[in-house]
Length: 597
Image 1 (cartoon, rainbow, N blue to C red):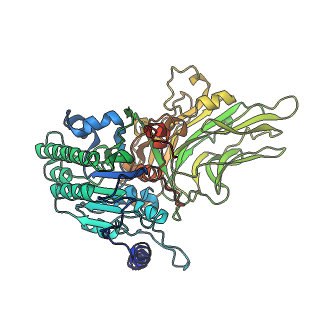
Image 2: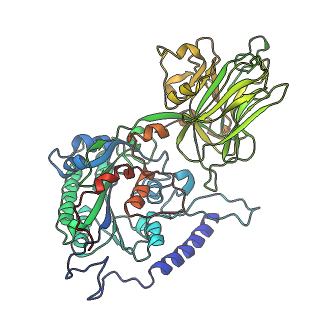
C-alpha cells in the first residue's frame, strides 16, 4: 500500500514537473525557427555548442570489452583521446528478479546517487522505502535524473533518449523532450543516426541491449561467439555516430563529449543482477577528440559492513592485568580509522549526538555528532573534546588522531587529522584512564551504517608529517619501517578472517603478534546463514588524495557530474558521484577563434 501511494504521489508530481517544463515544447522546429541557435539553412553559428552523446551497453563486462573489442575498431581508436577505466564497479545490489531492465543500476546512473539513497528496486522506478506511520509529514524522496537537472537549468534545452526498455522510458526517462523505444540495436542505431543528422539535441542517451541478450542466452563470456559479435556490431555503430557528428554542418563549433558505459556485467552461466565480481565489472570511457589518452588505474578496497542493528565489532580488551588499548597519562598513542559512511533514510550522512563510531567507553573514542566526528579522551582532570566536519559523503576517509605523553608542564600535545590534513592541534591537561577495562566497540548505537577498511593503533604519537604521509596508505607490510610502531592493526577483508567456525561471529586477525583479534558479530539472527558472505564488500578506492591523481574506478554515479560540468550546469542536489573531467579543461581550449570586433 505504501509503495502504491508513493507511485501515485510521484506520478502526479512528475506530470506536473514535465508539463511545466514542456507543455509548450514541440520536437520539430517550425520553418524559419532556429534550433539551438541555428537551423539547417542558416549560416554557420560561431557560438560554441556543448553536447553530450551517452552510449550505454547493457551487460558489457569491462574486462571482456577491453580484451575483445576490435583492435582496429572505433572504441580502440577512441581511447587515444579518452579518459577511461576497464575496472568499473557496478552497484553492490541484488536484483529482486532478473528481467531485461536493471532498474537499480539505471536509477543510479541517471540520478548520480547511490542505491542506498534512491531506493529504487523495481521497474516502477519509484523509491521503495518503509515510512514511519507515526510521522505523517515524512517526505517521499525521489531524486531528480540528469534530465530534470538539464530542464531545471534550461527548460528549452533539447534532450533525447532512445532505449529498448519501455518501462525505463516511461517511468524514469519521461522528462526527456523525446523518448523512443526500439526493438533492437540496429533500430537504435538508425534512430540515433537520423537525429544526429537532422536534429539538434544537446543531450542524447541511448542503450544497446545486444550484448545483454547474447549474454543471457549464452553466457557473459569471451567464449560466447554471439556476445562478442554483438560487441563488434556496437563498435561499428559507434563509428557511424562519430562520423555523423564530424559531418554536422556546425561541427567546428560543437564540442561533443561522448560517454560509453556499461551499467552491469554478468557471469559465464548467463546470470546477472548479483554482487559477484563478474556481475559488477563495468567500464567507462569519456571521449573528447582533444583529450590525451589516460587509462585511469583505479584500485579496489574491501570494507566490512557495520550497522547498529545488524553487525558490530568488538575487541575484548578487558583483562585488568593486561590492558592494551587504553590511554594513560604516560601513553604515546595514535589511531587511524578508515571508513566510508552510508546515507540515512533522508539521504543525509549526519548522525545524532555522541554516537560511538569507535570507542573504548570511559577512556577514549571517535563519536558521531551530526555532521562532525568528535575525539573524546577521558581523564581525572577533565576531558578533551574536539570536533571536525567529517564523513558527510560516500567516499573513503581516514580519520586520525595522536596524543603525546603528559609533559612537565602538566599537559599533552594532541593532533586531529582528516585525510592527511591537520584539522586541529593543541595541548591540554587530560590524563586518560590507563586501567579502563571496557572493550573496544565499533558501531555502538550509530544511526547510519558504514564500512570500515582498516584500523591502526600506534604506540607512538604520530607527527603531523606521518599523519599526512599515511593518510591513503593501505595494507602496510610487516617489512615497512613503521610497522614496529603499530600496537594493533586490523585489515577488514575476507583474507584476514582467522576463524569463521562460529555461526554469528567472524574472528578478524590482528596483524600484531601479541595483539587482540577483532570479533565481527552478527546481530541480525534472521540472516545468520548469509551474513558471512555479505560481511565484506569490494568498493572503489575514493580517498581524496588518491582520486586527485586521476586514478579512479568507474562507478555508475560518475556520469551525471561529468554531464553537468560539460553542459555548464549546476544542481542543488547533493550527488554521490564527483566531477573529474574538469581537471582536463585545458584540452577544451583548442580553437583559434577570431576576436570580436
